[in-house]
Amino acid sequence: MTGGVVTGSPPGGAFIAIDWGTTNRRCHVIAADGTVIAGERDGRGILSVPPGGFADEVAGIRARLGDLPVLCAGMVGSTRGWAVAPYVPCPATIGALAENLIWIEPGRTAIVPGVATAAAAAPDVMRGEEVQLLGAIAAGLAPPDALLCQPGTHSKWATIADGAITGFATAMTGELFALLRAHSLLADFMTGAVADGSAFRDGLALAATATPLTALFGERAGAVLGRTPADDVAARVSGLLIGQDVAERRLAPGTAVHILAEPGLGDLYATAVTMAGGVPVAVDSHAAFVAGITAIRSLAA
Amino acid sequence: MTGGVVTGSPPGGAFIAIDWGTTNRRCHVIAADGTVIAGERDGRGILSVPPGGFADEVAGIRARLGDLPVLCAGMVGSTRGWAVAPYVPCPATIGALAENLIWIEPGRTAIVPGVATAAAAAPDVMRGEEVQLLGAIAAGLAPPDALLCQPGTHSKWATIADGAITGFATAMTGELFALLRAHSLLADFMTGAVADGSAFRDGLALAATATPLTALFGERAGAVLGRTPADDVAARVSGLLIGQDVAERRLAPGTAVHILAEPGLGDLYATAVTMAGGVPVAVDSHAAFVAGITAIRSLAA
Image (cartoon, rainbow over all chains, first blue to last red; front, top):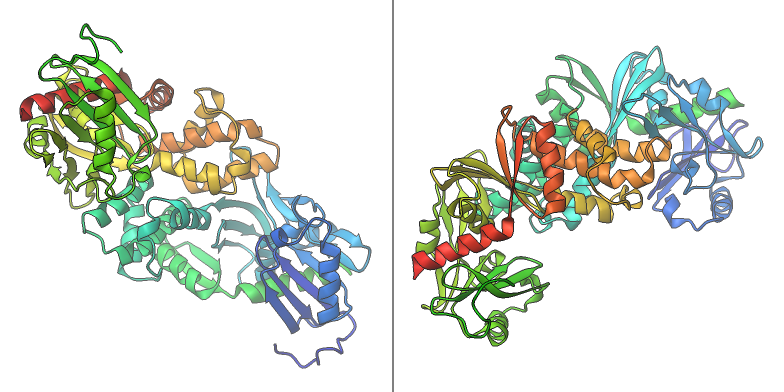
């Protein structure tokens, strides 16, 4: 990791930030100035922690990374996690997150709340993404009025106005892709790599026909009839689903979409946004998380 | 079974028709006049038959039902089945099916071919459904110019013109529902019954918003937030998927849709067709199969 502070001798105000999801966990030691000075990443998501096992997990993290205050975000605050953190309603600011921490041990260990939108037509919830979203704004990585996209198992699309999350929607894009690849009649064909290329873009074009259920079966028919190389099916299905996801946003032409993702998945969404008439802007999602959790820590201190 | 002919003493021209799918099998002893005089139904679909085991299966069927000619239709003619039957191209008539039987034992045992549409934008294939479709026309259960729908794991929508299948599309509707119920994040919530009712119709309304990936995640959010009773989620997801399936047909107002299905599933599609502005007409799918396979047998004799 980077920074001018020596690990093992953290300054006053340093803390451990844990991005604790369903299947993965990432820990950062963050100095008072917001610099990451140490960290670890593993597969100890909440589903791998037995009930009642969270305190021991955090004790282990402190033993490895330092006996520091701990601030957790993500599914660790869900009913399957350590303790249930509330949902802050929209419009949700970073200040509201800081004010609504759940303290496991006062002053020492806390969980960041999630965010909910109570829109009657489309209630929705998030846990963990809010730190990245508001962190991107806090760090100036995205403007205070913006549309942000976090692709993934459950893709989040958040509208930010005046620095607050005012509304958001979630699409089951990545989960559906994983289900199809693991369990469907297409599984035998979905063995190829997924990357931006002609097969992926053919899938985006299929999405534009707005017949996803038919297009999915068409992938099998195309492979059976020898029309589509089997190696292309995974990339085409990815294009179909990501294209559908972006199409559901009904982007006005020229709309900037700030994409917070790892480069590979982020590139796929950037292509889909461009083909839908939008303007993709890549945002460093790890920098956004660190900025967000550091701001929450400062506001809550 | 019904009919004036005594089982065990079949008349000349009687035969055994086998509707042999992936997971299920249905055998009918059909008299020369098209009357079903005996039958059996079981789970001996092609996936439960070991390679090379089909001849023994049919010997067993003959031992139970009579030493008669056998005509098979369905996935038994696929690469995973007994022998690969060809695909007859559209426009496909019942005569073309009869002319392109694959004879396992000449004059005694045959497999009905499938049907393919080579439309450049949407190649598609069927195996087994063609017998029902053309049988419905042959028996006068649907007119010779009609739109037919066969809901199921892979829903088929076939355009019939002048008594021939001129084109068709397949949607992965039932398979996607099963994947979601068995393996997704929604699985825990999808335990309720699926029937035509307010939850199913709410799902149809969700489909009309044309944001299926977002609506699927919304089911989880609605349940987590206590907005949707968990008992309703399965019916809502069914409505969402069936509504999407029907929406992909872009029915002109007043279009008659002849639905070949078991009553429960057929009723759901009838409601979806009605809400999309079409006019559903229920067709007895078993009568259609028997009429179709009998016509093929007559034409091939």
